[in-house]
Image 1 (cartoon, rainbow, N blue to C red):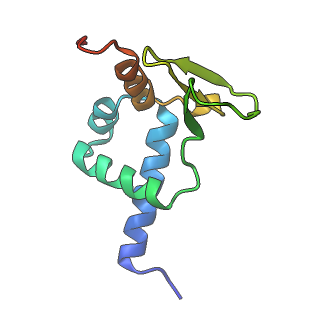
Image 2: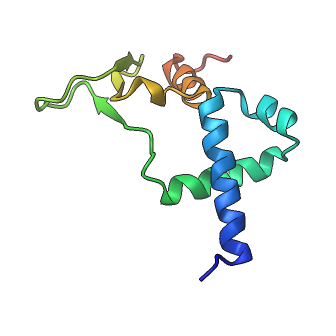
Length: 112
């Protein structure tokens, strides 16, 4: 049985999302280079993460909470709040995640 038009569309967008994630480009630059509407990319990125097993392997840890033995992390970001963001895979460090970490690392009341 051949895929429906809707299934082909989903498959096409998921391939686009995989290409975007591998590119390491900022969303706006990627969209401009590939003539894609940024809002469509964001929509499909959300859909991709809803069904994908390629989720970012990260955890946020409260440093004041008792810790159990954890596997070695590829990268740990200590935030001013005392929390840590631990990445289990350094390839997960996308431009969007870096921007989020920068925002989380800013002291309360600070602006970019």
